[in-house]
Amino acid sequence: MTAPINILVVDDVPQNLIAIEALLARPGIALLQASSGAEALELLLVHEVALALVDVQMPNMDGFELAELIRGSERTRAIPLIFLTAASRETNYSFRGYEAGAVDFMFKPIDAQALTSKVGVFVELYKQKKQLSQQLEELQRALHMNEMFMAVLGHDLRTPLSVVMNGAMLLPMMTDHPKVAVTAQRIQGSAKRMAQMVDQLLDLARIRAGEMQLRTARRDVAELCRTLADEFATPDKPSRVIVEGVGDQHALIDAGIFSQVISNLVGNALQHGEPEHAVLVHIDGSAPERLQLTVSNRGVIPPARLVGLFEPFQHRGESRKAGQGLGLGLYTASTFVRVHGGDLTVASEEALGTTVFTVTLPRNGRPLSGSSAGQGNSAVPGSSQHGMAGHAA
Image 1 (cartoon, rainbow, N blue to C red):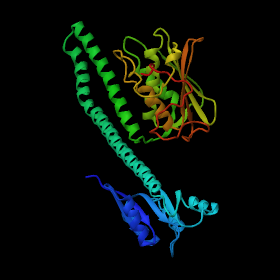
Image 2 (image 1 turned 120 degrees about the horizontal axis):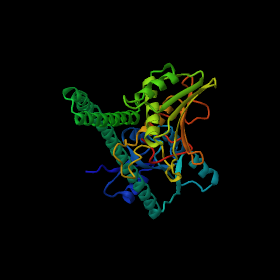
Image 3 (image 1 turned 120 degrees about the vertical axis):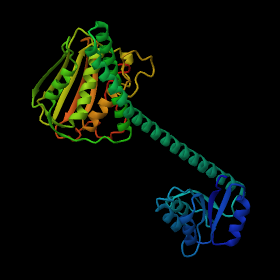
């Protein structure tokens, strides 16, 4: 059964309490009666109240003083207060009531129909508030379960994936048949893409759970970029990634997390850029307080798709092509840059035929002045002035 909704009535005259009870009593409503301010405070310690009807003129503690005490408590400050008074309708008197936290003022003799109507409105508002609160709790539980599912799924997929990749590596050693080698290479490529998707799911779960913790150290960003660029090379095909830099190329970063930023940006540029052109990674360390890293490639993004680039699951509005990622790469990259105190932006110039991602990092790990960084690692990134839907890896 649904618990009744409590309405607190405070009046030092017993006949008034009886009259209000007779007027407002109905199924689903429980009237809590108090003959003094002290008694009302005791009831508020025990019960949750949807509305309080407070008589102003009471001995020892009047209605204004009681209202100030109610407003002074975190637990009770949101309770709507309606003052009931037989005093004159002086403006200053009403002002004091509203300053004490009243939502309404009614003068005795009370209009029964008006009081019943006003109480009904606040009761409905209280019901709606409770329903919204319950729905929010259910949504939060569902979101938590979804995040836990993604984390467990991503973790458990690693074991069978490692078996597939190891088996693909052993296949060419068991026979010299050329088709076996080609098949093994395809299996390895598919397993590697699947492993990247699993990593992105785990990253998303960590971001949503607010569990991003940096282990920073002063690192050479250019050296890190060159190491990652070599990973995009194959025995029969050299890497199309060119790394160059100027100035002091060191910054305070978490090498593991920031490596994912570089890998996502470079991988995105290789996948979506023109295949006959190289991807240029440039590190500018000429400024003393910040480091700037740009990843540029040939290719133009249609203006219609320059919306919501750094939001997750960019392929949900279109059919995802074979070999595409989950649409989480640029989302996680932007988030990882933010937790470093930096910013990630993108620009696509149709006249030049290029797309450039720019990462700006503080050298000391503190958020840059004027940057949107440092707003919390659970926020959805989107600080770029240019968005790009459908281009996310």
